[in-house]
Length: 509
Ligand code: BG6
Image 1 (cartoon, rainbow, N blue to C red):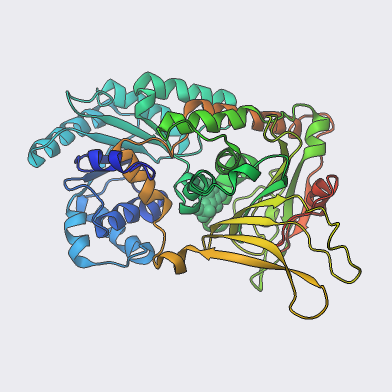
Image 2: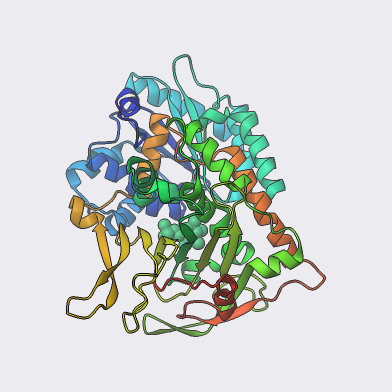
């Protein structure tokens, strides 16, 4: 459902479909996808007649699969478990066992989907969700095509959602795009980035383009710089180290989530709210990033770091290299800070700073827009205090909301100034929790709206930027150093120096 276009929502909501999830025994299916579909059912937003087929390699009966899902759903669903909803919901969930590269398994799937369609007496709409390990993405797409499942019957649709990681560099992303586009049309391809489904990320466009007061100031004349922080207190729990140590913070979070947030903050107003109208503007931002394409530029604008043993939430935690499934001699970053410049008329000379780290003091994602100081001519009275500039903070999570820092006079007979905050909290203003990102995104894909999904060119442009940095880091000759910070602190000193060169400092969260 396009959050900005009610007409589209009303038109397309009702179509029943079958959602086939590849990698159905995995964590994502259990912790995110099934709970999201269930929550949609609780809210009455899941179109009637939606069936779910879990596709995976392990032998399991429908019943065993359903039992496993019930256990996890009971722990993680935001709405608890309402048996009146869960009962009918889970009856529509089936399991299909097959290897990912087994033509026969896909033929059997095609037959099963036909049976489901005729039992439902409806159309053969299909949504294929590829949530397996990335090494199977190609096989799944090719086998879907061989079995003719990429083709929709007359009047129906067939779409694919591809989970991250979408490649590990530009070459692999291009290859995957070739395979996807040889199988499904681009308009039926949904590259998921769950940060775009977060409520406050969606609200960014509304904040900027539905309020007349921000946009006139949203440029280099009034903005000194912009920070995007994605802090996590977790490390490599739950066996994540195996994957993470091959990826690192830059590939895992910056290439996708943080550059997507950046493009929403920095984009020009789209001419319309169609999926391509919005994505045309977002991709221009990523294309306009100044490239850090020499080792010197990387050293001057990017900081990578690993954490050493420390304390998070009062508990002792190991250093990155001592984490489960991490190579003890690992050269992978668990923290990255990047200074970016966007070479457009609007943003000329405004630095954007992005940082992401594991084992920081708390989980928090926010964007802060730092406005230039007012000319201090009137209030530079000795003893008045330094007023500082205005800051607009957009809290993506937790405690979603928006606050504006202003300067006020402290009551009394003397002129003394102090910053104060105007604060908007979603939870108190709207009295209900925001839906999970996967709920919104699954519903969008079922409804045929790709606005909140990454387009091919966005993904490839982002990889171009990232590849230069990775190349410099992995150069045999004089690669930029790996900084260190103590787990539970706010990152390495080198990241502070990155901002200090422009006379700025990281916002304290
Ligand atoms: C994932 C990354 O895409 O996003 C993880 O692979 C990260 O490393 C996660 O922890 C963060 O998502 P969220 O929604 O918890 O901020």
